[in-house]
Image (cartoon, rainbow, N blue to C red; front, side):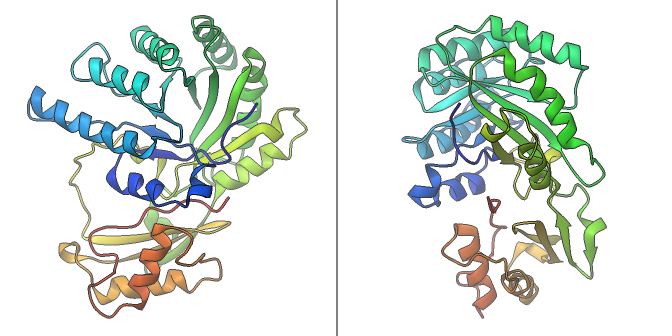
Length: 334
């Protein structure tokens, strides 16, 4: 088994694409995202096609020389524009198709065909919890039986939300992997989980807070097991996004009047909220950025685009070079 060292689960959004594009080449070579195409809406068929193609072009342009997975669980592959756009990108770009045992057979068939044509392999995303143990193994085995033997397969085990209130997440992952690993010669095995809190207010104290990274601890617990495959399991997370937000429409304009700066340290998420009327830069934003950059675990401006933006925001006294216009996307320290 082989594969990247880090498998982030990302929505196909401009800020996430910019973050991956901004990684240093040596780091980017070790990262292979699972891009998830969110629900996209358009006023008519023509506008929908333009919107979908725009999002797919974003990630295709970043992955000219590095591979990634592209999952489209909300797309109807028997309808336009998905029916012709996704097969094109799956077959002609470095974007490996992803399918799921729970998706319609028609979706699975298109993903399998594109995996054969593109030559990059096929991602099998298994979402937990969902179904009993017997059902998990049986349906995955049936799915794999339809895959061309010459197509490389990757196991993407997705725990979705993993918080402190789910202390048995690692045990659940091990039970699933015990059944799934023997079913195929997997090129990559990745464990993906979202540890960012669903309800930010619960961890805030005077607009500041820290949340433990249960996703990171879950992966370490799995790696510490005595399973023969444990050392090959790659780490994946949802970064500084709540896992439940992955499907949100790409044009979702339901914004809160409060801004939220988020940062991932080795063991925790840092969260700083502030009033952000009209989404413009304020002294409160800079104060929140200074709080984050003051932590010993802050990695410095050279670590990523997000780190650089936070540092600029903390130091500036005017609008130039600040966090104005959005919140940087942050990766986990792995």
